[in-house]
Image (cartoon, rainbow, N blue to C red; front, side, top):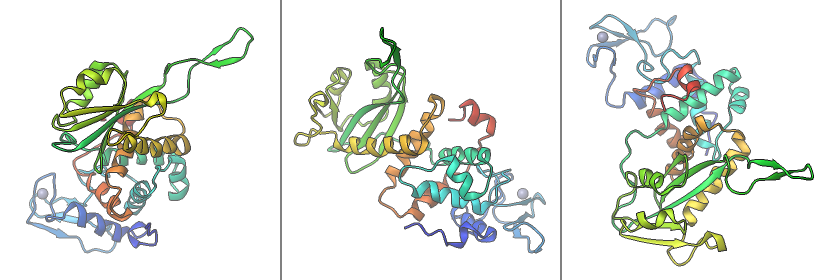
Length: 310
Ligand SMILES: [Zn+2]
């Protein structure tokens, strides 16, 4: 359920209190000097909400210090609402939509969506799968097909994947998903992504692409289905879980985001992975998890534009 009437998404003081309960779950701390004991609340009503004073270094601070929100001019309650909308919308939310719903400029909304994606990015995740766990691996292509002019002057779609962007996804059955934007489907590329991210004790499930054959031998088991003849399931050999994942992913990319540049694709794959991995909790819980990810991350407009800080 999405509860937009919750005061944390329209009351600045409540938004601060909400964020404090998540970020300072183990106690209030001023990260710039590390003081956790001797801090006090600044009571003066004319001050910004959620303002604290460090008795050690005599500086004022709020819960946003050292987070993705530091130096942001966007009110905190709008951030909280944006995190909620992004977490609760199954196929994502566009910057245009956020711009209209929050009453911020399009440029600000665009930057906000990328900061949210930065917050939900998993740091150093361990390998998926394990003994007795089935991991489905599949690939998909995004973007428009390349076209060539036929002799009769009409435009024709070129065969093959052309300049489409390749995405590789690993999904545990009943578990988590992890996706990557990859340059090609060669065996070496697949190894680079699959080996560090899937436990070798796992049971691998893929389609019959040749690149999977040799690397599949290094797993506890490897079974394939033949997508070319429309086979997606055969006993427990199927890849239906990853197909379901792609169904949401593609609907989101086509319906909501429409044009995604190769530079930013990685951020969008993180976003869809995130919602998938937290699919069994409520929208509010999913948004809270996302908000916890703002700590210790900084992202500037320049970094987003240049495709760095990924
Ligand atoms: Zn201090």
